[in-house]
Image (cartoon, rainbow, N blue to C red; front, side, top):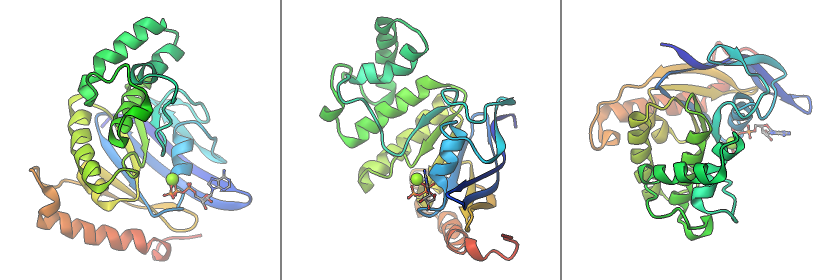
Length: 254
Ligand SMILES: Nc1ncnc2c1ncn2[C@@H]1O[C@H](COP(=O)(O)OP(=O)(O)OP(=O)(O)O)[C@@H](O)[C@H]1O
Ligand SMILES: [Mg+2]
């Protein structure tokens, strides 16, 4: 499969403490890949490096084969909090990447408005973020991220602030949109269910410093409620053990 985004040999320390060590991940075209790990393990650190918001101490990030290490604005990303601008309408917020790229504001807002329906936000163009529910704000942030780049989309715990019912609805919706739009998505989460429901492949980040301790293909049966199948539960048990026991992997050096 053609790699859209690739990280090679990434390492990062903060204040002399190694957080990430020798991270190698790839994202294929049209694929949704999840990076799964417990809180504090280094997920957002890797997100910041992949999105170019921070530079690694060593290693490099490739976008379509080109070295983009430490360069932001090339990959579309959605941070852990939605960060919509409170004093801009939903259509203006979504249109921001187009405006930053030099499109006229009126044209950009028109283009973004036309896409709102696809993201479940029909009729919301003139509303402000505070007038929307948490799920709607997340969808607006997602539309904005998609307009940043159609090549690759990075998401850091996009649904974690939502209540369980809204989250389940958003996950189903996102899976459909990602497929329909052919998105290539690198999704970071600490939620095993989310990783199993959304991804084609799962990387597990564990240990101290954080390393990719394994990569699992994910092919759950299609259907209304995959989380109620035996395969789902079996995968969940296996992954729970891996995520928790990452520090004591027999082959985990350092
Ligand atoms: N700018 C920084 N300066 C110093 N230490 C940092 C910085 N950013 C992150 N860290 C440390 O690096 C470690 C990993 O943090 P990170 O935010 O990447 O974790 P995470 O896996 O995203 O956690 P969560 O699931 O809670 O979001 C933590 O111990 C954190 O305190
Ligand atoms: Mg984080």
